[in-house]
Image (tube, rainbow, N blue to C red; front, side, top):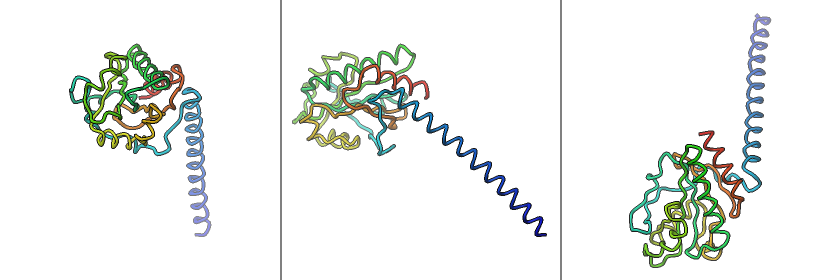
Length: 206
């Protein structure tokens, strides 16, 4: 009987060892994969440590007064950032990179929406969105709304509106997946090639 018990323990130990080995190999493969994705995204690529609790549904106005909802972009990747109406140097570069990523995605047979939310219109009037929208006609969705609403949305992305007004841009471009979930974010000023490469890479994985 003791021999049988010892044999049973040996079998169980063997199974556990094999399971441990399989899990170890899988974990190593995952770590190599993540490292490769970070390298392919360039130096500016990073993952937001807060994980999936980033972003929120929205219903904001475009320059023409139409209501644009987050659900309108369902099924598409989304590049979203926050800016002020003055949107100068770094902000303009980020929006141009977002526009080019959108074009590159379309050329690859995919769809990426580019969205900028304007935070400093008080009182809010859709006419205030027109100058920024005019710089990227039909290419970037320029949205806004009452200060309390856009501030709440910004907070869902970890953006502090008061700091943003001083800095002109949110400091990050967020990439959200086709289901609206957080995928990655890129620091302001990330090279266009790096942003585009990362976006196309995630499209390939979806």
